[in-house]
Structure formats: C-alpha cells, structure tokens
Length: 469
Image 1 (cartoon, rainbow, N blue to C red):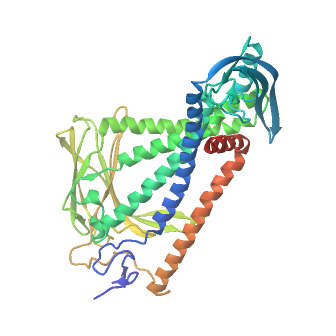
Image 2: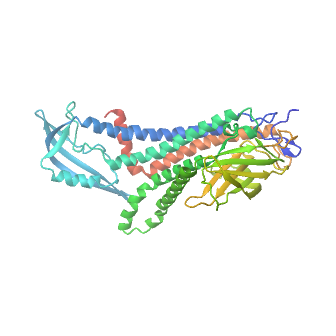
C-alpha cells in the first residue's frame, strides 16, 4: 500500500523525504543552491582581491624591477591627512621632475599603492626618507618614460591587509561551495537507501567519529575570527594612547580569538594523541528493541586506573523559521550512560559497551526540519588531554515494524493535506533562496561602507590594474 509523505502509520508519521518503501528520496536541493550562490559571491570577492589586489601589486613590483634609475628633483612632498568618522587616513603626495634620454618629464606617483589609508606608517616613513634623499632617485619605465615611481617595493602591510580580505571572503566562499557540493553529493548517494544506511560512512560498519569535523570547525573559527579581529591589535594601542578608553571593550574580540585558538590547539593535540577510532556495531545496523554491542579500537594506552564512560542518546532535532529567525532545538528523547569495558587492543585499548534499546523509541531518520538521530559518546579523563569521541550511528526500526514508519511520538492528524504542505515548503525554499542572496549582497555592502575609506583607493587600484593603466 502506498503511503503518502507526511502521513501517519500507527500514530507515527512517515518522513517527507522517504519513498513508499521507506528509502530516501533525492531532495530538491534549494538549500544547496542558495549556499552555492552565496559561496560563489564570497569566493569571487576573495578571488578579486587575490588577482586584482595582491596579484596586481606583485605584478607592478615585478615589472618595475626592470625600470631604470635616474636622478630627479622634488618640487613638492607632503603627507595629506583627512579625518572622518573618528578615523584619519593619510596619503603621500609628491611632484617631481626627471630627465631621461635628454627629455624632461614630470611625475607624481610615489609608490605602487596610490590611495589614502591608515595602515601602518608607510606614508610618514617614506616622507622622511624621500625628504632626506640626496640625490632623489626616480625609477623610469624605459618603454614609456612618462611613467615613473619613487618607491617600487610593495608594502608588506598593504599586502597583508588585502590578504585578510582574500582569507575571509575566499575562505568563507570556498567553505560554502565545498559544503554545498558535499551535501548535494551525500543526498544523491543516500537516494534509494533506507535512512539508517543512508550515509556512506555507515555502510561498511566502521563508523568514524566526529573528531575530524570538530578539528576542522575549531581551526576554521579560530582563523576566521582572528583574521577579522587582527586590525584591532593595531588600532587598540593607538586609540588607547590617545585616551580613548572605550576601545577596551573592543579588546573582547581579540581575547575571544585567543580562546578559539586555544580550543583549536587542544583539538589538534587530542587528534595527534587519539586520532579517529572506528566504531563497529553488533548487530549492524543497531535495532530498536534489541541489544546493541559497540566496539572501538582506540589509541588510549592500556593500563589500569582509568574508566571509559559510554553514553547512548536518541535526540529529536527540530528546525523552525527561516533566515535570521531560523532556530534549531535538540530534545533528548532517551539516553543511557554506563561504564565501558576496556581490554588490550591492537592500537592501545579496546573499548566495548552494551546497551539495551527500548522498543518504543524512534529509529534513525533522514535529516530534515524534524528528525531523530542517535549518537554514542565515549569519554575518559586522562593526564594531559581527555579522551572524547562522538559517533553518529544508524539505528533501524524494531523487527516486524514497517520501515516506512518513522516511529515518532503521536502528532495530531489535523491540518493541511501533505500535498499542500509540500507546495508551501517549496515556495518557502524559493523565498529563502532570494532572501539568502539578498542577505549576502547586503553583507558585502555593509563591509564596503564600513571600510569605505580604505576600500575606495583599493578599488581604484584594482580598476587601474584591470584597465592596464
């Protein structure tokens, strides 16, 4: 008998993303497309700063290596400052003359970067150096003698500042693109499989822990946060020296970055010590209403005096709302904690645990706005770094129960028909796609206007490099 999505069987609703046999259907992928579009926008901005920002500066420096030095005469040299919105930017302006192959020329370009900024003290330092230069050296393009410059070396602090945008925007964009492609690929691989065997890492009964993803998230957040707060390390001392004590509140951001870095280092140390043990289930998959035995060969040195605690939990995950109103709530439906047995293993200690899973609990369900998941956690307090590994495991329905029943707690059967609900969800996904794109563009606009005094000259330099002039 065909059971439509969203209907209930025996008081339990069938997951919307499964077919009549209980296998997962390929989702529409609207969320993946939104994530991919936003990732492409962020990645394009990062690539633009890399190619047209850092690349253009390095290209100018490389081609200026072949320019000819000639003596010149300064006519005007001044550091021009402009203050707005409690910030002062500087620009070194110059006018000079030089003679090349018997012809006199006028020049005004000082360095590779021609805009105003407040990054470091390059303008002030270069002013003092050029004022004291006897004679003044002008570097002339032999192919176009009207093009000349006084300083042909790139500014390390400017390259680092542009690299910050490459790292932030490019990193976020690359992460979004990777995650979008990964989720889409996993959805395709899951199509046609029952929910408790949907993931590729579940199919060979050697289940990896979440340690690798925890390590990646820790370093991603640490690098991203510290990159965003890096300018504060320079701005805070300068503002405090001028008596602006309100900047002490801004010191919280670098301190949070330090905390994230400590977390990432601890995760790295734990990874180096314990690695990623594989969990083997018996039976596989685990089954509601049956006994589960799980074994993991860990790199914990086998010795007495330590206890490994095992916790098995079934959690209901409900996601509501869209955009900034989106929220996820996790509710523990059932959990059990007990000490695991520890025996000598091939790598160190062989950890084994046994649980009796009650028959009334839900099985593993495909990820959606409302689903159940099962997780097993192994912990041990050890000298130096504690052992903590978490596994997401497949749990099938009890023997004799229909696979299509998601074993959810009883819900009211009143409300719109499933077809209407599916249509509403498709429309909401389209709205979310547009809202996500607008949010991404709005964020870029916010960043531009926040750093406009610095970005305006950078954009002019990018356009000049793009246009070849």
